[in-house]
Length: 121
Image (cartoon, rainbow, N blue to C red; front, side, top):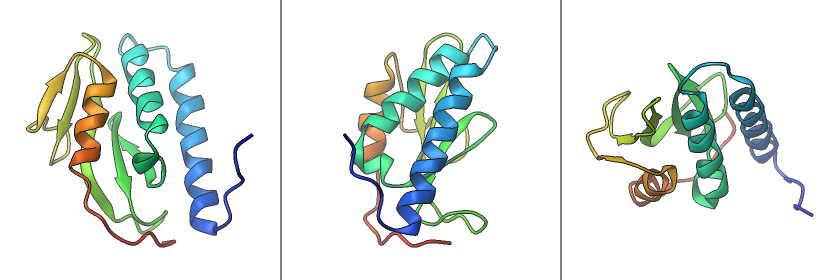
């Protein structure tokens, strides 16, 4: 049984992860299975799961603060209907690499995270 989050940041972060996971499981689009796999792979990685997740244009980003004042950190993850997963330093630009599995993309994303304190925004 998971240990319940004990800070407001952790509670809000876990709530947002759960929302993204449910949303991804219900999407009807052709690229939805790849997107869902990317969300699930990122969620299994503790370093990413500890960050507040957010999406824009179906790209997964991370923040050290919660809404409404997001502070993006680390790379952006993307998935397409061809089953390709991208990692980039900017929004929707997979300049760090393209991969055939979400776990490869997540691994690279973790290696490009900047250490820093997490605070509630």
